Length: 570
Ligand code: ADP
Image (cartoon, rainbow, N blue to C red; front, side, top):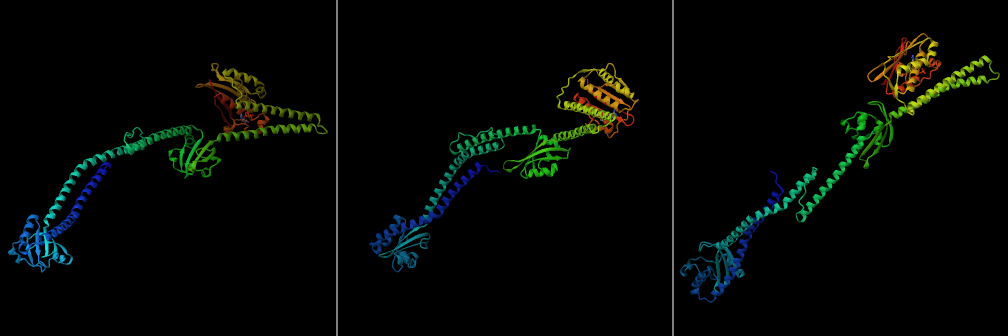
């Protein structure tokens, strides 16, 4: 059974009270009888001295009668003993019985009186058959001795002890309920406050300690209520702070990782979980176990900033910043995904290199021709004409290249706003075919525009769409050998129009197909250049189609022909 504080206090107080009363009774039992005895003995000695004075002038023949009278008046036994120990008067005996009493000279009290003038003894009297306390003093007759029955001492002690015991019982019985009431009065508010403290510890701040109590208990209750209020405010502030921090962390596009001082992961925000496909099982592990990247581990150990590349789940590059938390209780690491930036940077570098390369060839050819023309002696007229034609061809190539570059740059910078309007594809394709008819005629290629007359209009920028048709049709005419066929077809699909330009030219090998829409990618560089290609035509097509929300692709079989298709939303 669990003892409550009240029960314990009550039992302790009651125990203390009982122990106190027992101790009083025990002390009385132990110390009262000897004390009473010593008091009685000193009284007895004084009474003996009085008896000696009373008996001093009494003639010997009347001694026994006077002794008997003293006895009847005081209740004390009186004995007069001659210096040789013979009893000459005895209050309990008749004169004729005195001779039969044995000699008292060697009685302890007589010997004592002989030595010290007064002597005491306690013993059983054979003469009268009871326990007696004796006191003897020297007297003119020899010795006077008084005796008091000891049972009187026992009776006095017993009476005092009984009185005290009854008083103790009464005090005990009266004190127990009041002790109970007192402990209850003190302990009850304490228990109540303990209970309230328990509620506060569990985060329940609704209950208040009773502040009406007086004294220290009232102060304690007030302090408890204060503490509870402050705790509640702090907790609310903390949870609000925590919620806003959680919202910030969750809303961040950057990944955030927090580790403790031992390098174990304490927090991963949503962005980081998504970027690395992590779950709660990563919590408590080290960054090395989770990310398998030694450089990240080093960065956490020695915070700073670094660019790190992770290979799983996909290859990505991050600008990673690590900083110590306050008091070095851990590290916070922020992951900024710069994969796309890196890719763009690479694309840009590659583009600049490609452009420079594309420009250099025609420029150096033109420069060479000019230098030859300026030679001394100058070349003959026929050769000079040839050089001028080369210059013309390559300047034309430069012009085309710059035109395509400007197109691409306009498309990419999105400066070129698209003017969307319904466009009739059939008419547009027919117009482009007409435009390129001379080229087709030169190579004896049949171009057929086979589109249904009721084809819905596409939502597009007419000028840009014209460029798509020109580039695709131009490619078909360029790469298809003389006598070939080119067909432009279209059909309406779900919410879009699919348009294809097919030829029966040389076709494109499967390994090149996925790359032909890249800038400057050519299957056969020399042939493309010879035909006046810049390597940018298809990438411009892709750009335009995608900015219209459409898709573009190529299908081909080597030796059978190629088919370039794109879709446009209706
Ligand atoms: P280019 O200016 O070289 O034609 P494009 O971007 O228009 O550049 O085309 C890229 C490459 O795709 C071309 O060099 C060519 O090798 C190939 N190609 C494009 N169209 C066709 C086609 N109709 N038939 C065969 N090959 C083609």
